[in-house]
Amino acid sequence: MPKSQFLGVPSLNDEVTALVVDDNKVSQMIHHQLLNVLGIVNHVVGNGKEAVEIHSSGKKFDLVLMDRDMPVMNGIEATKKLRDMGVKSTIAGVSSHSLSEERQEFIEAGLDDYHEKPLTVAKLLSVVSKIKYKA
Amino acid sequence: MERNSQLHRQVALMRQSLFDQGYLDEQFVQLEELQDDANPNFVEEVVTLYYRDSARLIASIEQALDKSPLDFNKLDSYMHQFKGSSSSIGGRKVKAECAQFREYCRAGNGEG
Image 1: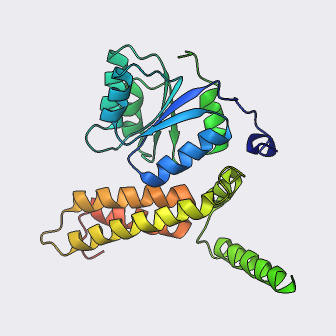
Image 2 (image 1 turned 60 degrees about the horizontal axis):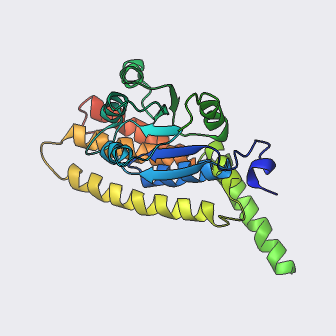
């Protein structure tokens, strides 16, 4: 039985693509598997600069899971840059910052959604339901 | 066969006691639910990665604590990472300790 069926959630059967942007290796592994279980084809990068570069190379994603605090280029800068580049993907901020000012700054950078870490199947399904643009 | 059952029961009891004593929370159950045939060792791999990453962070924190004066911003940054990883695997007690440490950093409390 596919894992998604076992969890009682729909499998997206590789119809949705996602980019995980996080410098934390544990978060990378968990988000990658979360997306796999939902049948979402996904790629993982370690900071905002790599997220911008992969988009500059021509790759497109339906969904971007963007961490806030990362070295080289953080999630706020990366989100602004992607929006300036005309990237229309659904960008969901995923962070462990609980202060509302920090959250607001991240949202105002151009996010479509925001969730506190840790991400769960339920939170991810909520994010997926907000995908407007198909890459 | 009997020995296997006993070992399984022991592991199950140990697992439950980690929840009962507050070391683990619901997030660990989420990780267990992500394990599937394509990734049969997922939980073990994540936890192994967590231990490796944590050892590196703890070493950095210890180094930073040896410096004078203390760089509270750096310490807070390390703790933010440690808290994030701990929260991701359901490490409830470690996450709480990290949160406390961060309070001390924000208050500039080196004694804490």
